Amino acid sequence: MSDNITIRSACGDDAAALARIYAYYVEETAITFEYTVPDMAEMERRRQEISQHYPYLVAETDGKVIGYAYAHAFYGREAYTWSVESSIYVDVNARKRGIGRKLYEALEKALKSMGILNINACIAVPRDDQDPYVTNGSLNFH
Image 1: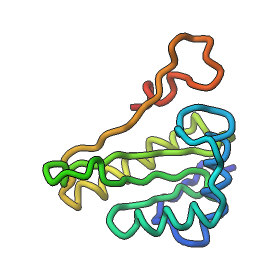
Image 2: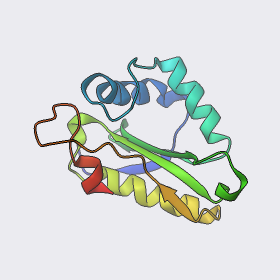
Image 3: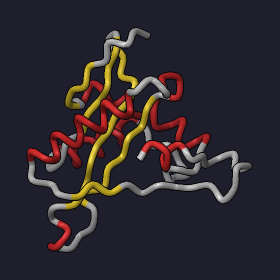
């Protein structure tokens, strides 16, 4: 993989890549809070729903999607209108290359242009260093 990374809006053609990237986190970690891997159709349904109101971005290199980020409503009360929750997933084989940072910066820029004031992240933190399903990766990133 080259380090020429493009950030763009996700589209329907990305559904298989989104499902592939996300599957690792569902199957091998506890950070998604999901037990069943969503299929390609479900990932596309989610992308379409979120994209109606918020940015849904992908990182791509050499024509391959290697990460994605999106924001969605933080909480269903009116006072939270200017707040979102963010999610970022990077292909397990493409981590530690700054892709998450590039996605987050692009997401933050897009949200700022919408007038969003607060970006929140739900982060799983391990109880100790021996947890095989949760690391401090998200905590350190954020």
